[in-house]
Image (cartoon, rainbow, N blue to C red):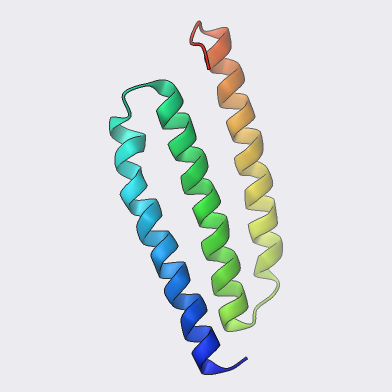
Length: 92
């Protein structure tokens, strides 16, 4: 892969990581539980994107499997938290 393309991928990964860090404000200060759940889900999705971009930039394609497993865990976590929120009386 060309160094220019690798730099573009790493810059995009940095932008997504910065966005995820900025979104942690919504996780901590979200006005409702639903906002916090969505924010955590978006942070997890951004993490998957960062792992995938860094994997491609460095040519280590084995990390794409790690990104896929993390995406599946993020999805299962979202469903589990939503289920427990509904059972405890919160409406999603």
